[in-house]
Amino acid sequence: MAEKYWNPQIETAPLHEMKALQSYRLSAKIREVYEKVPHYRKKMDEAGVKPEDIRSVEDLHLLPFTSKQDLRDTYPYGMFARPVEEVVRIHASSGTTGKQTVVGYTDHDIGIWSECTARALTAAGGDKNDFVHVSYGYGLFTGGFGLHCGAELIKATVIPVSVGNTKRQIQIMKDFGSTILCCTPSYALYLGETLEEMGISTDEIHLKAGIFGAEPWTEGMRRTIEKKLGIRAFDIYGLSEVIGPGVAFECSEQTGMHINEDHFIPEIIDPDTGEVLPEGEQGELVFTAITKEALPLMRYRTKDIAVLSRKKCSCGRTLIKLSKPQGRSDDMLIIRGVNVFPSQVESVLLDLGLTAPHYVLIVDRVDNKDRLEIKVEMSGEMFSDAVRHIEETEAVIQRAVESTLGISAKVTLVEPKSLERAEGKSKRVIDNRVYD
Amino acid sequence: MFIKQISVFVENKAGRLAEITGLLERNNIDIRALSIADTRDFGILRLIVNDPDTAEKVLKDAGFTVSLTQVIAIGVNDEPGGLASAMKTLYENKISVEYMYAFISRTDKTAFVILRVEDNEKAIEVLKKFHIKVLTSEDLYTL
Image (cartoon, rainbow over all chains, first blue to last red; front, side, top):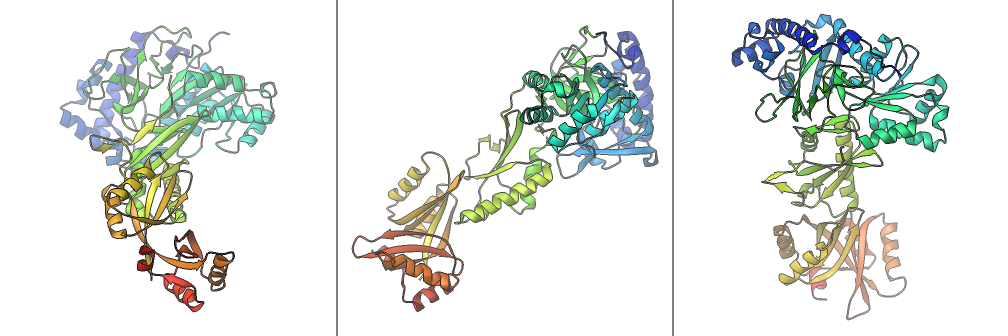
């Protein structure tokens, strides 16, 4: 089957043309943010960089980095480069503290986002004849709306199912004729398993492809999903600070994701020194959004560890390729598609009036589903001679953790000083999941 | 009339009970009675010892989570129905038992029951009124 592109001119552009486009857009965007975002002006002044110093992508390294901390310091709208009346949509993701990381979109930005996910859907074989079944959550989370707008752009038929009620999802899939499924890979697997349980064969449903992202998954998982659902499974990458899903997407070669670099310039840096690393080396992924209006982040540190490659791709796209992220440079965990910071658990315990106890988050993947257990060291105030009271304490912590993190967790109280400590500082995360 | 009970939080892992009992042995502490409440992940070891204050200190110093709880000890006839009548009395007087455990003496035909109830004062008042023998710490330690 011939490869289809949504925007062939951009997706197969020669490198020098892409660099010229990036340079033009970058220098214009830098002038704009310097003028419109006081926080950027201050940062650039402190770094001794003027907008006119940035004339091409080769000058990008001169700019200071942006991080989640900048968004927190300017919460909620301080980093916006457009007045809020031009903003047509707000999304948000969980932050390391109680505060959300807030992102905004102008009408134009929604257009860019639609373009990005339209490219992803087209690369997965989608067109106007398809029924796009979106089982990502709709809401502040960018997953649902991101794929939704791209599916509308390609004139496919969107089925905005959102999350939950798996049996009903399968009924809809069967009856409405869903052909492309969009959700987290773990939910795709769950759907596959439920299909088996319900005794429905893949011939009875019409799915041909799936676009799965928002959490780490393995090649093994890909094969299992493809078999269980009778589809080809494609990876998609994104983060709300940059735009949401669609920053990068996979093609028929299935060996990494093409970055929509006409909108987001990627860099790989050494997370410790901030030095830019050459193509092919592993490091922290950094993005500069050169077309967005509301929140054009400059050199935003994603904390994702990955590799970039310009190796020729059999699909014909020349867009730079991103390896599947190989981990994080901070302690953020992605569990069932939800960002979890260990510090959130600590704030829950403190809010419950428990004096800063030691705890550890243990993540396992059992039957292809993520499972979170939180071990908390028992202190005198939590102890009782009655089992009932201790179990109540566990339940109280569990409910509070679940409502803060937004995912279920098992809470286990353990003996004091029993959790491992490294150089006096306790280890907060044990991730037993295997990544390819 | 109250007895001091030592409660220790014990994770379900090998060697913990050996460690606790060894610690008591080295400090010359004699165990009069014990029970373990166990759940899937942890247990609570409850001990009646001849020197609860020392026991509490050595266990705490060793890093265990320990608490001292006031419980009641009663003596009943070591024969069928001996315990039943005491339980009936508590039930009829609306005293609910959180947990209990029993042991027998070496000398006479008495069985002893450690009771953990919500309201110790009221329980003792009821027990005494119905002529059930309530033991003091001294009674227990000199058994």
